[in-house]
Length: 245
Image (cartoon, rainbow, N blue to C red; front, side, top):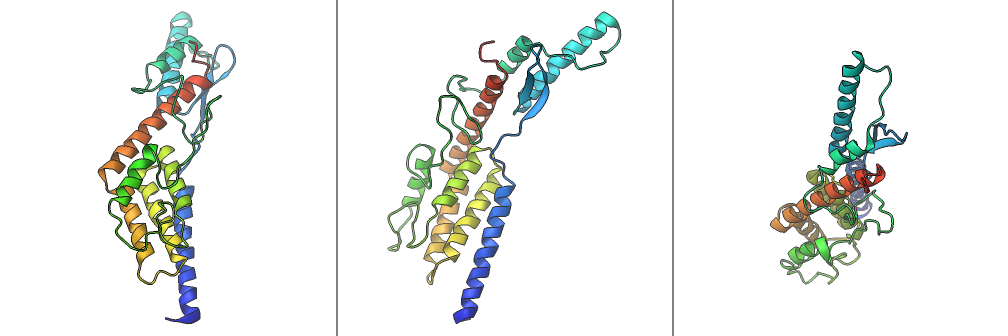
């Protein structure tokens, strides 16, 4: 295959890989799902982003229903308002280990007044991203390496794909889906430029292996999971005015 046919084939491959990447990305939410589960005795809605919040609201609702039934021998015709103090006390017992209500970690889709929003860090450099840079640099031996961890091959940048992967993990996306989207995105980037020796594709495979098959990546994903749980619990406490209860 030469000339126009080769260019058409490359273009079709790029489109196919990009389509696969965006289909997977669309299935990975970055905004927490918020459910209205009742209302407080002050009239304010009780909203939940976590199962523990829903459980706390349902437990308090059940307690109130049983108390009503004991008093009147029948169930109320309308939903009863939740006792805000008791609901908050129940929710507080679900605080994740090591989680601070006053300073929860930044997490996609969750805004904390007075604190910076979550920001991805590309393909490495500091914090959780440092393990990735170390893992990649420890095995790169190619003379074609550009020296830039975000753009290892001339004319190709993996930065946006790495950012999307950061967000996917941090938002609680399923690891397999996040890592597959990462692989497809880097491969699509490589397919868009000449790569006669497969060097760029080799970098793409190396990057995918670093996020999907290494012990540091396992540890990093677990850390992100813990941060997300903390951020969501703190969100439920904050948005339901439980901070001072």
